[in-house]
Image (cartoon, rainbow, N blue to C red):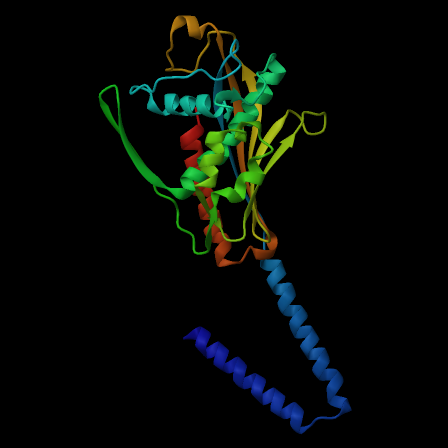
Length: 306
């Protein structure tokens, strides 16, 4: 009622003002009318701008990659019903970390194996970057699955957060995005993106960013960026923390002793940062995107965190 009364009062006042100006129109009324109009518009603009505040949501967690240093790739792990989250994540890394194509009826690995610690850190960081995008895509699509591991029943359910303005992009739209990541050069990955879909906020886009280590930027960084012009930039930043000696594995992970002695654990930090633009800070969409960012951060941490 208050809003309706205010609007009706404004309209009546505007009509009366226009009628009075028309009835008494002359060169003397032009300057005051323009001055009042300019001051009113400027005051409204200033009041709105003063009330707007940009904001940032940020959190971080650790994750790891187990690497067979002799093979130069994550080892294949059988899912463990006693530790399904860790073994599922590392098993996925084993598949993603060995991209292959069929060439003349033969399976050909498309990447060079890392030979030293610098190459291994870069290898693992880029692998996590790719796994991050796959994880975000799975969270956004949602779905469920059931199965059995060593006689034990397992099930997963992913329920995406629904947004008011969402666009379901064809998976092939992202082939150019992922082309810069070595782990996308795979027949299996091309099939996945060719026949998949990726729901995201309307008019948003995804990019892969690589920052080499330097005195100004610090350690090497692999970034997945989601952005929607005028609304937000969301970064998932992967950077190294350290590595263990041979045979030291994540807590709860077991493997054959002969294999374990060839493996090292490479640890990384994933920083999740969402920056919301000042210009749309008062929009109802911005609050929805903040809720979505918090939901997405929670989902990524649950899927990839140690």
